[in-house]
Image 1 (cartoon, rainbow, N blue to C red):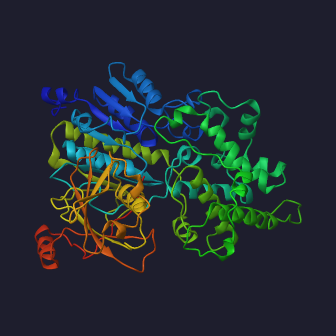
Image 2: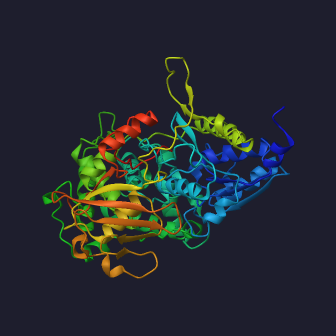
Image 3: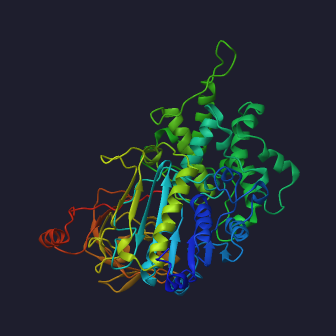
Length: 558
């Protein structure tokens, strides 16, 4: 091919970083090696789960519990013996993968499956001025985009599509977000009361053992399917509770490779919860409030008994199955209780019944073919970057139905950077609406700064008072329980947020007080600090329509 000049071939020898060795990552690594790229480094924190084997083709049954990055590296090396490929079994959020680490690569290709890591990689690539190829799939849908600092919009310029597809290994073994626990709880409902799919069993697999530590009795307890186990124990609430939240969790803690860069879960038993002495009164609690752990446990017990009672045998003697419906009060409370108990075990923020009801949508399965298609398209864009064809880069979407031109694959030119983006624009400001009398510093840090804005090690300062509110270095734990108002923060205050790890620049939060909000409630409004007239004029010049209030979305397309 005429475009394979000596200069181009030399550029193929420059290192490429691939983040993620799962569904898309397996296809991607194979494609890169066979397309002529000579130096690849891959990083992934996860280990291989049995549920990965049906679509992540580089893995086999004997690889279960091993590092995805390591096994994928070995498999691709066999296909391409001349390939210089190196792996890291770790989290891309770790301090060791700093700006200097990113700067050594010709490009970064992301095949991640969670919002926080994707936002972090987007910011690191912007700071290091390294092109980023971002991709994701959700069932039969897929997309890819390329981020080049100063030339294209970044990953956070536009609100992302709500995530509805989640890796099975994350759901079973390593949940990190409330939605992971909600999906797990919905699987549990189907396993106990509905038409159950063995592939969706929520129990850890026996083959997932990475290191010894559980005895044979414990292994046998987790090996049997959840449905069969419940039937054999006549749906005894205490036994089911202790299996799900104590025995299974203790087994997970023995898989040491899972917890090298994660906090281990904490098992809970029914006796332990009862000994805490908390009153339940779950029926009297509002649906928009966070209940006590005891209240969720009591709700789990009560709804488990009610739902099992509805599975009366039909004329053929076979118990009836139930279908989960968010408008079924018993079913909804069961899922909410199970999800929040699991969240407690994994130190994940709890959600109200109201929030869980709104989050519990249909779960879209991962499709191997979609992953393969997207991975092929990613390599095409990667080859353009290697050949310095920046102006030829495309944003590509895979749709389920043809558009008016009869195309399922739709490509467009990448958009230019959005002036309203608080990540890649020159002025990074947003308005943050909270109740300063009720919200604590701890909630500000965990729920807003880290969970919503995805900072890793934030430092927060009140610009008007010149006081430190949150520090990544100093021990200021005594401030976490204080209300914002106790630190002098009020409507009109401005908080400066910085992150030593990401180094993408400071973010300014302009505080708007709203006394009607609860402690955990907040509202984000994108704001560049410009007046409405200025923003309209800039929008007309850029040829884009900028809304007065552009809400920042929380989820991403996988």
